[in-house]
Length: 372
Image 1 (tube, rainbow, N blue to C red):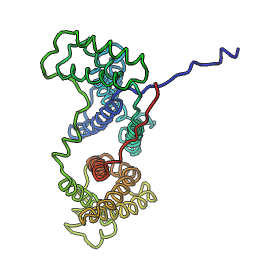
Image 2: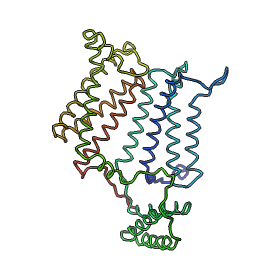
Image 3: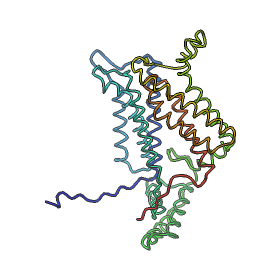
Image 4: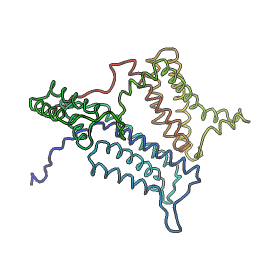
């Protein structure tokens, strides 16, 4: 009886380029929801329907999710994983976009809590991505593992000269620093096999969605430190001032009036939820907007005065608080009209992390060596 209750030990191994596939899914999820809401708003919320039949876009989302799940089960090509990640991201976006219908008795697509739920799901996916990226597992047989993946891919489609060279390089590294003699023997045999293959194809364009190479070098060339610092200062200052728009319109609305007051009221797009529906949360939102706006403006001033370390820390804290609390409330009261500002905040947060890592080259995701 005891044996019936025992389970085999399962050792989970992270897939190569897992964070890239998660990133593709995340971007496609966000784009799917944004484009769907924008299209429906501009088109007047059309429906594919008859008297009794209504084909909601959640069905298309389910179809794409099913396709994204089937493709890796059917095909072994490496590029299929990227395609599956894209289909899964678009599919889950179309699915989550209709969450308001799932949580209400009246199938209310515009239920106010739907937008915060979608945003929470998006944040949880980001947390998962950061968790995957936090520790880059580097098994002792990493080079041999990569070479095996590349050889497997070359069996399906003939390798180019660049891919052939990379395979040889990985195998040579595996031979030089093997975790065991058996690994070295396997690497030598694979290297002999690769070198005995017919000449590789010349470099050519392939329809493959892969992690971009030399990203850091590209951004370092396009955005040197002074230019990146200037963009961060402008972005933090702009978002910080925008944070004060709602508190100022409430506190000074009766005093300003006229065209200036009307201008403040018009600084939003799409549907809004009245503050009277949740007065306590609305007041909390105003207080948080004032505090976060002050932090972002202070961070911009510190970066402008060359106090980069303090500026990046305060900017990261301010953006983190904004993305996890203020924007959650904004998605309730202002619905999807806050997507653009939220996207800008995410870009600024990534920029600040990148800028901090440039100034402190020793920082970065920890590398954990895993024994074979």
